[in-house]
Image (tube, rainbow, N blue to C red):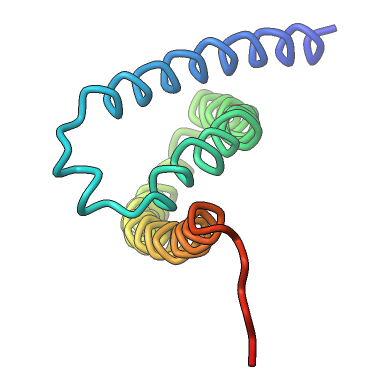
Amino acid sequence: LFALCRDNVSFLISLRASRTIHADMLRAVFQAPMSFFQRTPQGRIINRFSKDINQLDVELIWTIVEALVPLVSTVSTFVMVGATAYFAMIAFVPGLYLFWHYQGLFSKANTDINRIAKTRDSLVYDHFSNLCREGGVVVAR
């Protein structure tokens, strides 16, 4: 019963966030100056509206849900250990510091990898849109 309520609430939050982000993106593109369209490839714009919104719709909410369940479990375990054997909490302090440090490094690297992948993928969309705009006929000799 709890999982069903969690999934329904997650779906509604995801739907509202997706609508808001898509509307804000569309408004920003409509209000962009012409210089934006001259220096930004069409593939990158299309990529933002297709792949990025799809990631928000499909992956983001489940990533949040799958992160919150272990977080609540871990916090409750720390509370129980702290209440019964508070000297054991001293051993966890260095581990928490190491976790925080390595998580920051991983987050920076993951952000850079995702940025590079999105830039690489936008070239495919740009090439496809140029083919469609120019008649779509490719002659290989």
